[in-house]
Amino acid sequence: MRVLLRNPRREIEIDGGVPARTMLERLGLAHEAHLVIRNGTLVPGDERLEDDDEIEVRPVISGGASP
Amino acid sequence: MSKCRACREPAIIDLPRHNANFCDVHFRQLVRRQVEKAIDDFAMLRPGDRVLVAVSGGKDSLAAWDLLVELGYEADGFYVGLGIGEYSEASSEHAARFAHDRRLRLLTVDLRDEFGYDVPTASRATRRPACSSCGLSKRHLFDRAALDGGYDALVTGHNLDDEAAVLFGNTLRWDVDYLARQLPVLASRDGLPRKVKPLVRLTERETAAWCVVRGIDYAVDECPMSAGNRHLRYKEALNEIEAHSPGSKAAFYLNFLDNMAPLLADRRDASVATVGECTQCGSPTTGDRCAFCRLVETASQHEPVPVAMARRR
Ligand code: SF4
Ligand SMILES: [Zn+2]
Ligand SMILES: [Zn+2]
Image (cartoon, rainbow over all chains, first blue to last red; front, side, top):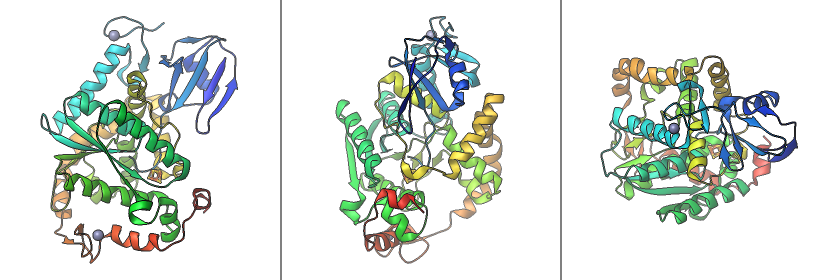
């Protein structure tokens, strides 16, 4: 499946057939610091992602003294 | 497939700290309730208050603006153009589009146009990290705009992760004066507006998710000056702990407010020393001229520094 990563923006191709949470673990990304979005919709951690899905892994941690 | 805790419909998000999954409808309800609870618990606002939201174009400030409008407050936005290259261009577009689509009022000030400098140049001119002159500029301009516009309060989008990271830093140093003042609401006093942080009960993941479910197109890309920022490291450390014991972050910060902040009340009152007025702009200051007026003088005399150059230091 195709996965869009951000900061910097890039796309990778990885195997589907795994829950969203497992995909994050494989990519070494913290659950608490990311959202998984499929076709513009959020998916929970145990949702199975398929090979033909287009996924965005969106980091949610902002740096600096906000806003 | 996981189901919503409240209605058993398919879930869209898992929130380990609540040990539950939520559908779209019940996730929104949870977010709204957390914001209402923060506003209530700390008596941040009164119904119908007119507020100014400090807007960066990022997820937190747009979520704060959106939520306050939804909860019935009269909320205008205020955006400061920081001159941080593409990041600033993109974030100002996100802020402007949000306001335009919802017919909300967005006030803007551009540092370069109005004061003759930008953040990268200020960083170089002062030989200080970008975030310090940036934060100083924003605080000053937000305060000013809130006072000049006669708003009941200035709203910022600080979330639970932001506050927990600041608390972590203050605690590591046992900086008691900072700890004493780390509250989600600060009363107005001479020359400073009332300041409130209605998102302190929501994590960053929750404010970002709110934007996704509400269709808020915020600036996802990060400010290039934030890399290596100390608070980012604290956030990562806290998230590492959170992964092993969900709810730790919320307990760390919210229990501080409940259990520790009251014990620091004396210290707080002592630190609200009487201050004078800046001879140039009238803002509160302990010196002759305020830090902002001094920054403007230093930074505006420096030749413009491009973002890429400012980062290499
Ligand atoms: S990361 Fe630092 S320089 Fe960038 S906008 Fe935030 S405070 Fe300003
Ligand atoms: Zn539900
Ligand atoms: Zn001044």
